[in-house]
Image (tube, rainbow, N blue to C red; front, top):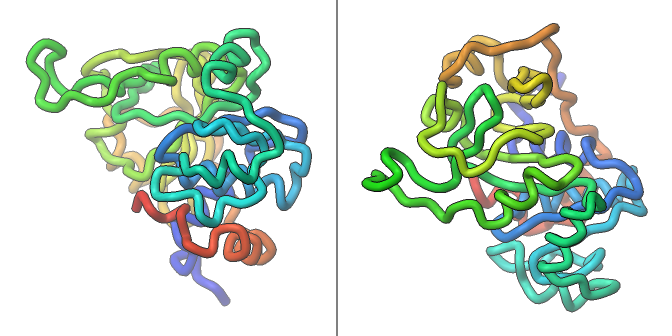
Length: 242
């Protein structure tokens, strides 16, 4: 019998994100977004063949992601694409309510759905100055569903109150190495715990009191999903952030 600890966190997160995506959705990922990029390719290969894959270089439905460079913004994503759709058009698409899903990042999150990607500490004299809003400030408020992934889950990431609000609200899901959060009724709710974790571990690593209706566990990757991941991501880009 296979133990839950035999499953890699990167595979659990990739498959969980893939299963959030639906056929015929238009989905965008940005730079340094290997895990969602692989999840999008997995969804197209398994259950969502007509999902539309948009990315930073502008390639629509790239034929391959196997050599898409360390940044997930390589020329292959454009060169093997079916069409060209530049970044400014992605922003316009989202503001017109036509972008179904956008994958975005952040450094701090609080229970009210505030996202910090700007500074750690005081804004005028920060301990760390971060990249800032960039696409998040536009896409989180305007995309139909904003999914954030984060490869660290600790009390410095999930805080009682963010140091600076880069953007807020309109989140859909946050996927971490421990769990999945759902944003509803203005609060982050614990949607599911990964079978490799526990409620106690999630709470110990979260800076606010967890809200949940019923304890659920994230589905483990299937044999078919794992086989497809080896095929579409032989260089294991999905694990590059861990």
